[in-house]
Amino acid sequence: MELSSSRFVPAPPQRVWDALNDPETLKACIPGCESFEAQADGSWAATVAAKVGPVSARFRGRIELADVNPPAGYTLRFQGQGGAAGFANGEAKVGLAPAEGGTTLNYSASAQIGGKLAQVGSRLVDGAAAKLADDFFARFVERLAPPAAVAAPAPAPVPAPAPGAGGARWIRFAALAAIVALIAWLAFRGGFRP
Image (cartoon, rainbow, N blue to C red):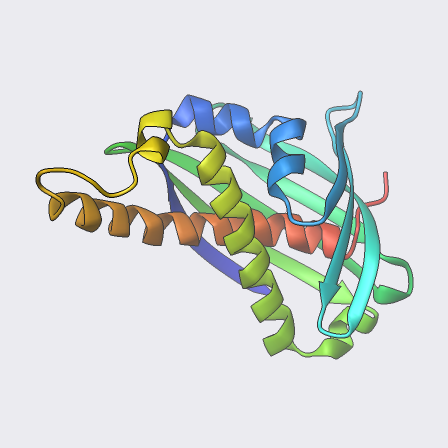
């Protein structure tokens, strides 16, 4: 499975970087995440309950960082196991770039899955990955959005520019959420085992 996209996050690159490296933030943003803990060797161990079509399981896995270049990006390598549900292995390259009003998060991921997950079918797996990515990025952006942007729903004297800018940001954000969620989902659906 191959996936690449970009998302817009309404926060500066350093803040996005810090959030992407904070276990508590990741645990709160990853759908079904039961634990996400930094390990002494620099890797992360995670447990996620997930359902992909008819396959439900608790996945345990391990994520390692490579090519770390703060706050520009890194490579995530993951491996996970979900018992009879199957496994997932792969890597994702994540890059952060300053953008007007925030950060553009670019990612490219590749993964191999096996077991019952591989039997579900690529359309169902792709759909589940997209949903998880969208859910992850929605939570991630909500956490990082400036309080003023969250507090101001839709008033304003000139609403025309705000919807255009907001719409473009949400489209970029949706793409970014997909990568992070996909990475987490791929890692967690197969589960990581330390």
